[in-house]
Length: 138
Image 1 (cartoon, helix red, strand yellow):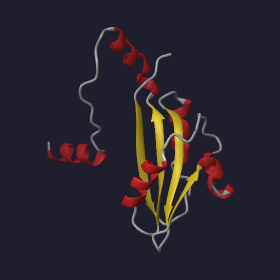
Image 2 (cartoon, helix red, strand yellow):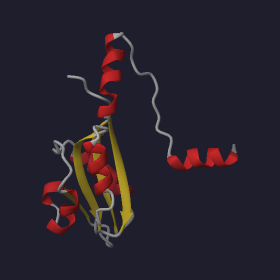
Image 3 (cartoon, one colour):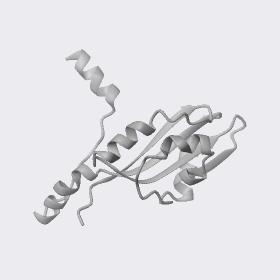
């Protein structure tokens, strides 16, 4: 089976309620075959700094409903240590969605590189803000 690169992102938000604006975009990425969701966990830090971790299936039904139509094999792949490191970076009274996805769009090229005896030697994601600034200064 061809497997594309796997990435994780941590999306932090002020407050501790997920409103679901990212869910339709995730659904679109999954439906198009661009990504496959492997794990989705929520980290919440209250105003006193108390941290809680919530898997997608344990979210409040109102919060979870935004993600109902996202297909994937969501399973607890993040370790407790992973989540604790992420929580350390959150400011009080904030939350984060922690996503692990396969770049399924790249599965074929990844397999072709392996079959050709090649290997990835460098990869870096450049934040959109950096690219926008570069275009503005060009």
